[in-house]
Image (tube, rainbow, N blue to C red; front, side, top):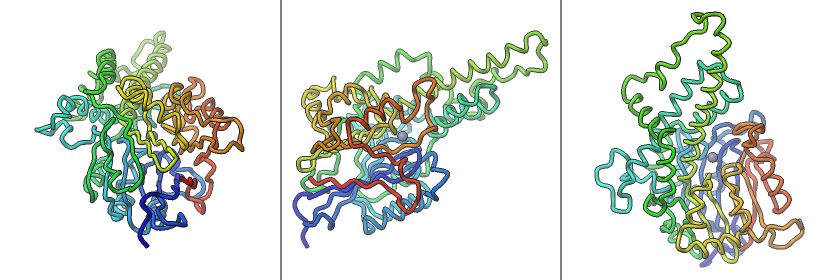
Amino acid sequence: MAPNKKPTSVTIRSYQVGFGDCFLVSFNYGEDGKAPSRHVLIDFGSTSLPKQGGFSLESVAKDIKEQTAGKLTAVVATHRHRDHISGFGGNTGRLIADLQPDVVLQPWTEHPLAQPDATSPPAALAGAKGFVGALAAMHDVARFSLQEIAALRAPKTVKDQIAFLGEDNLANLDAVKTLMGMSGEHVYAYYGSKSGLEKVLPGVKVHVLGPPTLKQSRAIERQRDEDQDEFWHLQAKASRRAASAGKPLFPRAAQVIGSVLPVETRWFLPRVEAVRGDQLLEIVRILDMQMNNTSVILLFEVGTKKLLFPGDAQLENWMYAMKEAKEATAVRKLLSAVDVYKVGHHGSLNATPKTLWNLFRKKNADEQRKGRLQTIVSTMTGKHGSVDRGTEVPRSKLVQALKTESTFATTQSLTNRSVPCLRLEIPV
Ligand SMILES: [Zn+2]
């Protein structure tokens, strides 16, 4: 049977990967909406699987193989964080690579010629090496931060946060290599660029709304100037140390030992360490945000429907498409008509900026309303941020708004591996 020229429906599967993302988006071209389909895998990673229910990345990879009948049309890796790409490493990565995607889509920051060791960057990426080098240095900062907290007397909540963010930011060389080695055309996207998916998804329009390049947006660089003393120097320092002897990031800081201090000053030490813990957490948090902001933002236009997949993009990434770009008015119009929203960054507050949320005009408190906005989040509570600071992920305020004004689905409702994913059927 020859496939239709355009899809008749879309199936979205959101796998239970704990804290991470793994979305299989199937464009169904058959008359009955079943077959044949073209499958796009958007991210496959986890930093933490549910303790109960018997979930594993292995079984997710096997299910993807089964659902796609052994063939992926495309793989999208929105950004380099472990909770989005760890599944592309090891055995599960080989399973996915065997599905021979025709297109592998990543952000421009992953372009081999933008890497610090590249010798001839293309004109579009001129000046990008320093930025990409600093991104890479985050992996070193993450590693040193993990060493640093081990010896620190800071509150457990602070230590847990540093450990979590630190681990998420560690280099995932295995996954990165597997992605690089996958079959098909490799596309490195930026705001306004082609996604490479149009060719393999007939009748589907794909808009790349982020990330902006350095040329497009100076916001990233501006932030870099303002925060220079805070962390960009630190990243350079971390890289140098990583390249040398692997000494700790703050070699002198750890040399005061409680028992050698005069008794009357010992009360001071845990307080100083608590402050250091807070500062370290702040640094790691800023770095984590920087990497999130390299996320590819995709908007699929299929028939009458618009599906938005923004990875973990946060405010700075969004601002270019919504405000600074010369097409910003048209982009906002497009966003206002979104039917399905993959909630950004596992439901953190700054990944669903108010400006974006306010645009969605299909929000509605009436559950029965036809054409009501659908939202879907892949998340796990208790891993990221803290309720005290109002930074918990998913943010309760946001979840409340999602539940009230949209038809909301969360992977947290999946408690047993017999149901490995949420499934949305979207007629288009
Ligand atoms: Zn993430």
